[in-house]
Length: 328
Image (cartoon, rainbow, N blue to C red; front, side, top):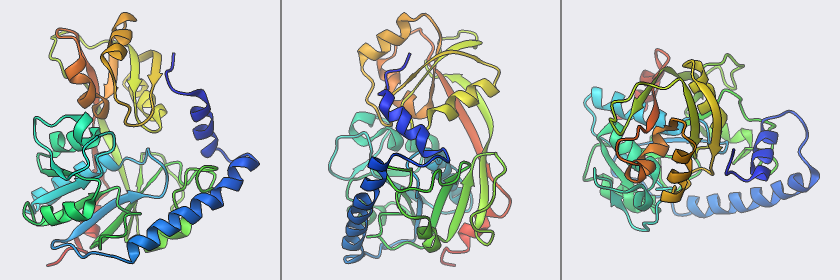
């Protein structure tokens, strides 16, 4: 069972194959590129220097490169070194148009699912903002280094260090949207300071000089409802993330039998009706932490909400390579 539009699934699968995309999509790629270049040039024409160092974490492919867990890892590393990081994200999935500081009471429908999750996992100052220049002004009063989530194309803010995450699968078919997964041509990686290959598979480096590895080294299943039920062995996988097959692969790596799955678009706003449909199937439900921050308030008390949580680590020297760009 899947609630996700099948044509979206087919197009996304095609992006990561070596076959040539359909001509109609290839004809649209130059249109996308022209619009993207125009937007970036506009931002470059009014670049702002923040009052604190800015570390940008971004990508050149659409979704699924592990930005959120990487930002968590980086924020915790910075805290260990005595910094006070402020995380600024766009608030995807949220409705608020103004800069909002995330708190324990913030709702994903207001500030975005990733913003709520980042606050929960880092306990840092987290700002959700469509206008990240305004957020940078506020960040200067909350900490001494800013992590700009999904910032590689947001060139209106000067950055101290530009980090780009690349999934194990690399850049897919190498085509720009909508024919492929690329937001920018591969040549854009030249302006990155640090490249991080996320995932555990061994693959050819895109740049030996500045490429590092980062991967999840442990998965665990936890019940966010504390229902005191034994961990299941047969589960229903529910998720609203990019590249949901990675989630299913991780569940299977734990020895779980994924008997069915429900995939939704990235940042999908779950409803009470959705929850009732899941529970009516009578199979324990497992979600990602990004999904859980939206589902927890809708979930039935006394019923487990199993969440796949992960611990991740970068290879030795990765954090030092990033820290080298920080002011002494």
